[in-house]
Length: 163
Ligand SMILES: [Zn+2]
Image (cartoon, rainbow, N blue to C red):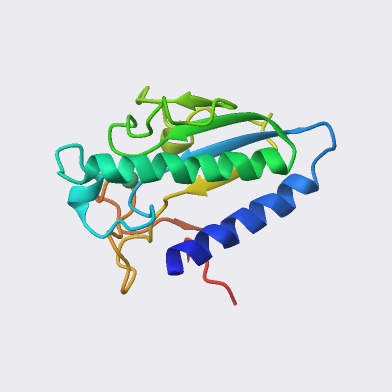
């Protein structure tokens, strides 16, 4: 339920940003991780060698499609999906909504999970993201590859907790 609430909150924030941009259609960037996908509770489920991996990559693709459909309903005319987990080859291309373009694999560029984004985009949606390293009671919590314990800007640990 926490994951679903977080997803809805993110979509609402993004939607409000998107609606304030323009009326000519929206260009939307969707970055998709896997540890926060519905039902995921174990690393095996997000690992290519895990026996339940195929089930959860299908759910990952369906949740991405839900975001695509939401973006289209909000007026999106150009959607780029960035597969951002592990090998970056998790989303099932044949099941992905054909109204979106899919960016797979890694180039080694510094944009990492946001590779492909530029200033031309009006909105960003994050799907399947997880809690940062050290978050109490969180499932599969980590930051980046697991070697980073915290990311902060001007001494403020991210993400900032709501007041
Ligand atoms: Zn991941």
